[in-house]
Amino acid sequence: MKTQYKLIRVLAIAFSVLLVVLSIESCEDEDFKVIPDAEIEQTIFSIAPARADVGATVLIKGTDFSPVPVNNKVSFNEVSATVTAATDTLLTVTVPEGATTGPISVSKAKFTIEGPVFTVFPAPSISELSVTGAAVGETITIKGLNFGATVEENIVRFNSIEAEIVNASATELEVKIPAGATTGPLTIEVQEQTATLEIFTITPVILSFEPIKGVAGEEITLMGTNFSRVAVNNNVTFNGVLAEVVSASTTSLTVIVPPEANSGKIAVEIEQLLALSETDFATVPTIASFSPETAAPESEVIINGANFSPILDENIVRFNGTVAEVTESAETSLTVLVPDGSEIGPITVEVDGEVGASTIDFIVDNSIVTITIAINNENDDVEEAEDGRMLLTSGDLELGEFDTFTDGGDPVGLQKIGLRFNNVDIPDGVTIESASIIFVADQTEGADPTEMTIFGENIGNAVAYTEDINNLSNRPLTTANAVWNIPEWIGSDTPIEDTTTVDISTIISEIIARVDWAQGNSMNFIFEATGVSAGAIQNDVGREAETYDADNPEEGAQLIITYRIN
Image (cartoon, rainbow, N blue to C red; front, side, top):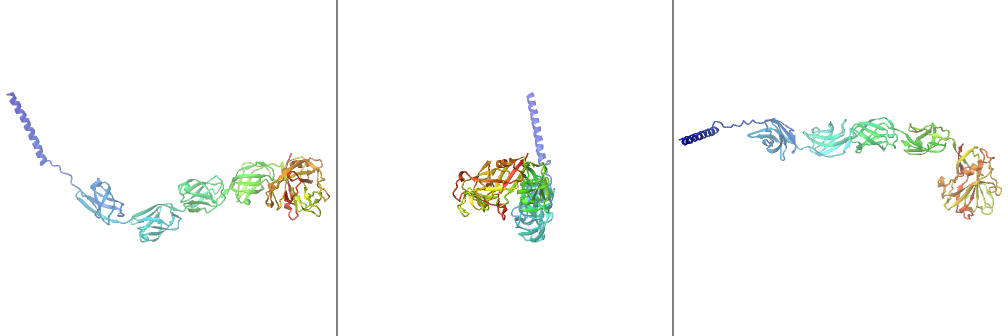
């Protein structure tokens, strides 16, 4: 009985579950169907741009677009386009290949709406410029495609500054660079389409610079327009000398005055476009050093620095106010002679009115004196023949050469040479530092080895030569002497160092040590052929020097003596 009851109870429960399931299915078929929201028709407010070329991006503004790009179907005059981005109110599309002028349409679900007409218009393009840079006010030619056929259809801008169009065609524009134009993009706009050249260079302009004068190594600031922001792209020169640019912007340059610069225009060149300053920059000469720092009058001093003139006469050098002779000049060095009468003090160099001064004083050593005594009488440079005859008015002096001149008798032969210098201004008690005799070579060349020994006449005041036989040989000689091996002479172009004797200071020292020596006396020097020149029998050996001539006094020999006042 209990078993039967349990079975009836299980069957009842199963039947109840079946009824519930059947009820639910019945409800889904009739009373509980899911109904989707109603689709809302999209709208188009505007398109931008309204005209463009194939490949251009167009923005469609409206309402109720699908935020899923592929759910929006866009066509340009029935040619399908790609939607690259979408929101409820904005579609971004690309003008498709094959598109023609006509309305834009947007489809979504069961709705298709038509928007404004889109005009397919080929974009302008730039293919060639007559120049890649120009100055304000200049006219350039731009070549390309799809320009407006009339002036009014084109808008040309130089870095956003609109330019005047002089002439126009579909392939060529003539344009004047506008005032205020700066280096930057060149754009051409035609029917809302734009062609762009990334950089068009406007000629730089130097408006001013400061300071207006300066020394080598000093920084100068240039103010202007259209400079390059890249320092190395600005080629700045001071009167043609390239300078270093340390910083740059489009309106200013900081540069360093170069050592070789001279006063003149400052120039800025960018891509072969040149700007010149209206006024000159004045370079002030600078003295970095000089050597030696102590010297006697007439001594040579080399001044090192910058902004000197390579033209000798344009440099005015003073030793503590006393003008010095400039013997050599370059932009960075001057060679000068210490002037007589100068005193301890600064050295100054003046170029074009600008003056630079040394930072230390030059010390004039007035204890060192150099004097020059020249032969000043035709009877003071003489020859003595081998037989003792005296030739007081010979036209030249044969040094180590056999002279075939007979003078009415036998050949003169190998001669002794005498040189008498008058008014030798050496005071008592001085020390002879150096001494030499300088000859002037005549036209005759000579390269054979030649040796002459130089003596002094051992007397306090040498008397004039006479025509007496052996007038030269009979004079007493100093113990001191100097052997001169004469270099090659190449005629009148022989360098002065080759016609200058060896040092004869010991000979002069012996003479002035005599008790009969007095300041202003005369000295006699005697040259004898020795060594390889002794016994010469040919007239094509040795050397030939000029003698003093009243018509050519500069051809006479000179005695150079440097002494120290103790």
